[in-house]
Length: 174
Image (cartoon, rainbow, N blue to C red; front, side, top):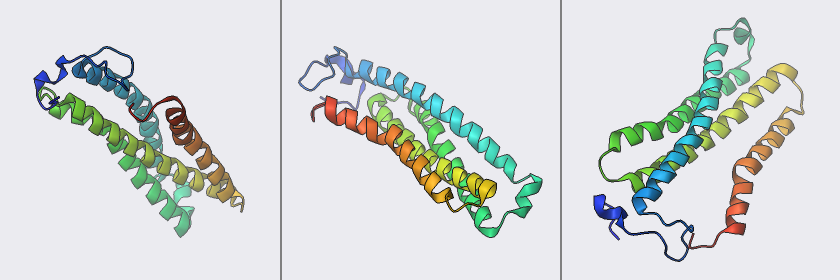
């Protein structure tokens, strides 16, 4: 079925491997878009608050006391935070620029990819921020292990459990 034009969504989705819904491709794209935007709202809020905080750190008195390594970690954190913010805001811009062009199913795929990229960048941002904060707060040799443990937790919650559930409860056709 051709999905490049407006006539794409006229067939009902009831084929093998479907998700059990009887919806057109256009209806499915609309539903998936609404779900994606809800997910992005949560991630956007968190990354924007974190990024805003990161931007203020450079203006504090204690910043000038940071060593070279901590300054590098800070710069990496800010760059990752900026990239994460851009990737997580991108689906909104993407949707706005392609609205009315009859490509919503493809727009949903691209917006989903941008969201995943944003989550990966957010993972990097949180990792670097945690490393910096713990290094400044403790100067303890256990810091890398604490950071690794938290990153492991993020990976478990964000990727491993969803991947396991997807593998366990879906078929390859889905």
